[in-house]
Image 1 (cartoon, rainbow, N blue to C red):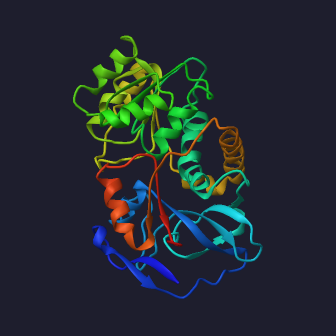
Image 2 (cartoon, helix red, strand yellow; image 1 turned 90 degrees about the vertical axis):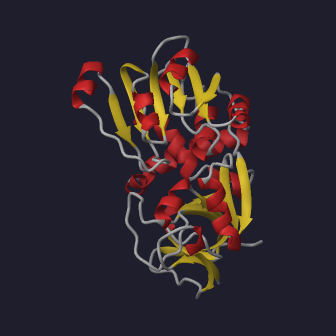
Amino acid sequence: MRAIQIREFGGPEVLELVDLPKPVPAAGEVLIKVTRAGVNFADTHQRHNEYVAKYELPMIPGAEVAGVREDTGERVVAICGGGGYAEYVAVPEQRCVAVPEALDDDTAVALMIQGLTAWHLYRSVGHVQRGETVVVGAAAGGVGSLCVQLGSAMGAGRVIALASTEEKRELALELGADEAIDSAPEGLRDRILAANQGRPVNVVFEMAGGQSFDECLNSLAPLGRLCVCGIATREKNRVSNSQLLKMSWTVAGFWLFHLLERPEMIEEALTDLFARAERGEVKAVVGGSWPLEAAADAQTALQERRTTGKLLLDPTA
């Protein structure tokens, strides 16, 4: 089978198209013929071995796929953790979820890692209460575009979108944001407060790190929550415990792969997301699809922030 393999950590050039034997499923696994593989910002960290988990070489990247089970012919979407940038991948059967007939593969993949993250940012991490103001970082991206769309349904009274270009801010407004402002770190706190009529905000979904993290933290009202779901800048931050105490702030992180140990949290969220997508309440914003051999181009476009929504690889192309 054709697959993208990494034999050394580094830049996009380490993503090599190779021919490998088709995986043989172990006990409890199923073989999936991949029709779409998700491309995530985390993949660019993984390529440098700078992600939350550490990796061994050689490896096939790709944490999520949509495709067809070889044993049953059923259309499924799955979190595979790795191996997704390929024509076939073996996945534990319990991680496979049937795709409703009304949903295409693009939507199914977009609602897997990005959708689960967005859903749990509201419910499990941010604990958003009815009427609260929510700030969404990277609002035109895969997670952010879904966070914007879920805002009203999840009880947010006001959604403020952060995005780097006018085009991306316009997209966020089209998706339902009440305000969309420049995400540049300089002066970000002041722009957030201005977008909220001069008042501090309740919850921020923060994906950048560095100065943006600090600016967002300082935009919070007492009892506010900063939810960290990415470090796009690769800049780490320190938080003062006295500041947290003084303002009753919560800073919480979210890494989706902890849900693999709690399958009921995946099932609840995906059931809700699939139903919303079938009703037309949530749509997947697909920012581009590349053939397998162009995986480096897809990751480069994502890392350079030239894209919106969910990026995909098509091993059938």
